[in-house]
Length: 145
Image 1 (cartoon, rainbow, N blue to C red):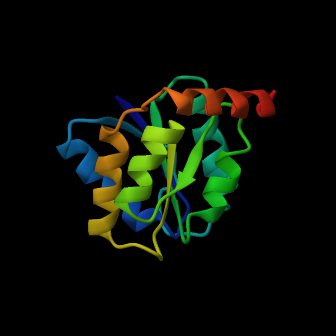
Image 2: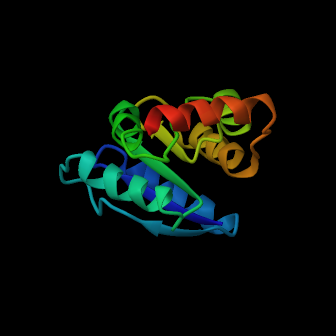
Image 3: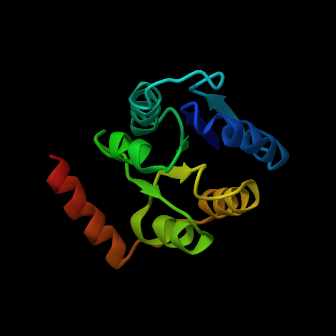
């Protein structure tokens, strides 16, 4: 599974930590930026990452900013992206199972490294359940069109 990974300056340190986890778990990842703690505007990172996920270049994406909200807003503007801000493993599990979320958003000010790693593990290991949830995703696709 190829993972697109990105952050703004507020999420940079957590992104770097998650690179280690992704490597340990055997995932291939590409860093969409940023490359340090100098201020950047999160839409410059979130938009190209979301477009790459929507195009099928990456199976899933992970975006990190201070509180996770800005990244999720931008990612959800891209047709075909279902981004969710998750602050615990339970929401990450249901986001994958029920909503087939393909971009995980995290807030580095809201969660620590350990919890972020747990959320990422769940996000990458859970599958979409389909069934009644597939019908609902079709309705979301209709709204996008």
